[in-house]
Length: 466
Ligand code: ARG
Image 1 (spheres, helix red, strand yellow):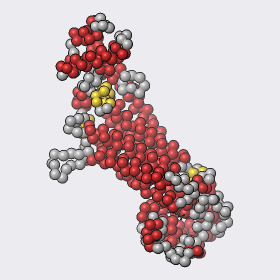
Image 2: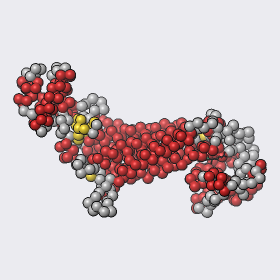
Image 3: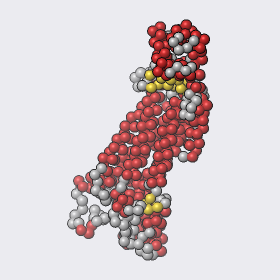
Image 4: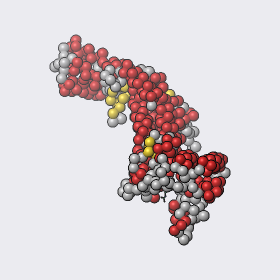
């Protein structure tokens, strides 16, 4: 039994130590359905090449259906001696179809082209699940942005109050990177749309099999152009892995924001009870665990990517067993994202902002200082001086423990006197409101309510098109 796949030239089976190192069914069994789909297509290719009679093909198809049924029901599963999913499924097929017929299916294919095809099939399918989950998250953020309306909040750089922005603008800033992640997956899907089936171990097959037909049956448009590349490259697996890691990082950035906004000191947002956790000892606690897990899992998603890249680096260019290590990292990423994203989206969809508090905080910390400087520029003051004059206003307010709008008319007249007559100087008050400040930022991509509304409309249509 040990000798099943390569018996001829061996006088003993693998040592138990080798077998346990070599074994991969504990993680690659999830490729079984795709492997059986590949076997169906391959059987038909063998029949077209005259290597299976139509009767044999029919019996093979019946046997493969039975195998699929046994896999689905758990009646057939890998055993200790099976090296990988392909070895196990071959054993299963031989059990059903007998050695004579079952033994014909292996002709003209290698586990090298097989596994390279399977990882592509599996990843493509999962990428679509993940893309849709990312779009759900985008929609939850878009809905929150619509609900936020014209609510203004403190915009920060370096975590310090910088300029007021619409809450919707801040939330939408997280939508665009996520849409790019989905777009990356769509774009990657075009590149991975080529089947390595028919590449054999590395050099192609001699049996006159038609790889294009196999490719089509497996959902690929085309076949890889080079059989060595087809079996040995995993750049497309790594590219998927990058997008998964990037999505993790994008979600982690939003998590960090939510965690801070949810603190007692900020109190910008409240999380729904169903998406928060408590403490086993402190009865008052309500914790943002989903956001923290998302932030933590981003580290793991990055680790999966760097582990895979390290495996690929320096491999000779045809199949080497190192390539078996391509799977667990992306499986882990898929499992991680597919559990994380629905929970995260639920948290985002149900969180409630404290609009009054956001509005009250928006202009504080001298966040309108840039508006004063830019107003002065509109009055003809060179920006270098305008910056200085506005800074002087901040200094006075800070010294008194006040905000900019608490300065008196006399203060402004005094500070601006070298550049503006008194009647003009007091006009600065018109920009000392958050509404005026955000409305003024009306260039494309700016935080003015009209621009943000346009932004939401175009994000929505991007979601529909992606
Ligand atoms: N299980 C292997 C993998 O996942 C495929 C088997 C290839 N083995 C071989 N000796 N060529 O990459």
